[in-house]
Amino acid sequence: MLLIYTHKITHRNKYIFNLIFKDILGIDFALTNDADEFKKHGSAKLSYTNNPLEDELFFISRNLLFETGINEQNISVFEFNSNKVFYATGKASGLPFDVFAASFYLVSRYEEYLPHIRDEHDRFEAKDSLAFLNNFLSKPVVNIWAGWVKDLLLKKYPDLFFPQKKYEFISTIDIDNAYAYREKGFTRSIGGYLKSLSTFDFKEIKERNRVLMGLEKDPYDTYDFQLAILKKYNFKSIYFFLLGDYGVNDKNLPIESKRFQSLIKMLGDYAEIGIHPSYGSNKSKAQLKKEVNRLAKVLHREVTKSRQHFLKLTLPETYRNLIDIDITDDYTMGFASQVGFRASICTPFNFYDLDMEMETKLKIHPFAIMEGTLKYYMKVHPEDAMLKIKPLIDEVKAVNGVFMSLWHNDTINNQKLWLGWRAVYEEMVEYAVK
Image (cartoon, rainbow, N blue to C red):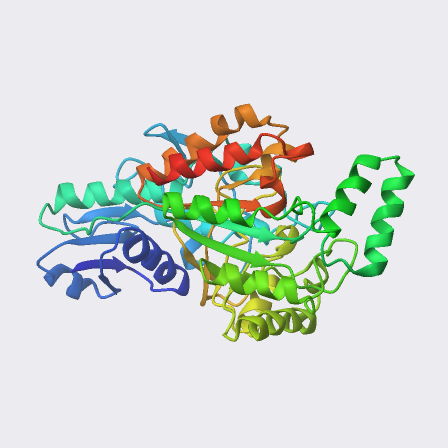
């Protein structure tokens, strides 16, 4: 077993050691602040402190993991081993930067607790992140850095065993609007007709008529295609259903719809199901609880997975609300405006509540790519989309992490605005599962 010495054991360094060594590298370790115990240890060991104790693998520590509270950080990013790093320590250390403090800063989303300007949906913007500003948003640097620590340990202690980690691909689909025309009810259907008339969109009126008469498939009903791809390539898939009350930003079907309930149950036979908390639930724990209960009632089982609608994430409030209603796994960690790794990691990790200075049991699952990001924010055409997607998959495969994508049922319909994107989805899946 690896023994780690540090001059002061804190919630922060216990958290990041667990993440780096157990979650990413897959090895067990013990932590001590007893110098005599450390010196007597006869096998693999490393120290994280100001000066080495003997000839162990030694990492100079900066202050971040020994502090409490949230303070402005003086960060200077530089390049090492063709990757970006920060919190420089000098040549005496195993690495010329504090790998543990830097990893904690990124994974805890420290910068999102600092004062910043939020976008129109009250979200922290990608353009303000350290990773985007320093051109490493497209790299899971925490995983890469962990690999460097592993290499140094094996060089010093060649008998130390690291289990082989396996790369994984997970496709996630958000169901914001299960059908374009079906199950909308009389009032919403009339509103749809009037909207089409106001823009002289007679083609849409004809399409709506044919769908409602059962002569044509609803354009958002892409579920047969999705399940065919799932069967063909055999990968893990998760669906997140929006079950909020109707509003400007929440327009899914009413949960009373039997067809909608049947769809949820049917997809639950092939994939995992989670809640997609509504835009309106972000500031109302009661509304959030109501939506989770709606889904649990349909599924006849507990709901433990979640992804915020519009990727509305405010730290730490959003995650605290999820914890309070017994959500165990959240999939919101990604940016709406840029592809890449919001927390600079492609391994699931526990949420660390900086305000409370404690590790929680809420598991955060970061995603790397959303189709709406490519189309609406980055203005990428479907024929060029894989040029953005493939490098991200390659980065994750290189560190044996988890590549997670985010799509929507309506964007795979291969019609109108989304013409050509169905092929992108299948090409992405095919490349990801290789």
